[in-house]
Image (cartoon, rainbow, N blue to C red):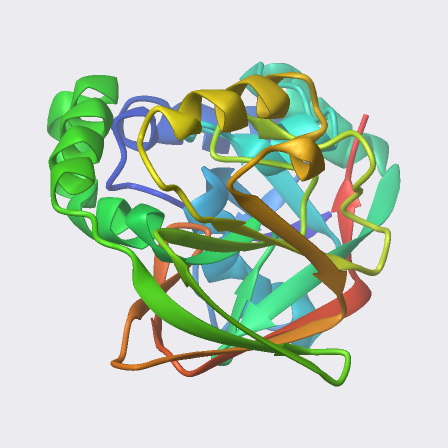
Length: 273
């Protein structure tokens, strides 16, 4: 097999394990091409986290070839959803075995995402969690930037359009999810990455104590029942705000509002075990 290999060399694990991944793939008979313009590849292999997967999606969708994942990220939500092994050798072996699953892909402002795209608190956090911060401080950097963002968060007004409906409300966090799990902790039992739907979650807190109830229902896998959490399901959402707000797609910059979120059903094949 000849594959385009996209390696996140800015992450801690990318620096530490990148060369090992290349050796494992070569030993399995996979010829890895590092030039993104390379043609005649049979697959695209990502060695990194969910953000690196996002950077690879245009190559995968343009070439119409399967995606292989060697998880080297912090959360690895997509890999966990698809039961891709977190062990490097096992993840590489899954690619050569050739079993695949079709998954949906979301898009916002022309940027693809597999897990979620968001506006609000998590976007502010993502902008502070630069590759330099993650590489130098790891999980401690994630915690510090989250606490810093929480102190500065204020509700903002949103106009939401979907399925010929129009809603207006104030929120601190708006998330549109393609996956049933994201953020390392969120998981919803009645959603799937190949169900053809996008799920919207709006956190509308009257007090931060109310956030505890949301956390409890998320832990149970049924966030739709949480007070202070608006949930909607559709194939397309249009989000407008009074002033431009940054949008993030799986933690990567995706422009500003107004933003249109849409779904591409079963658009990508992923190697699984």
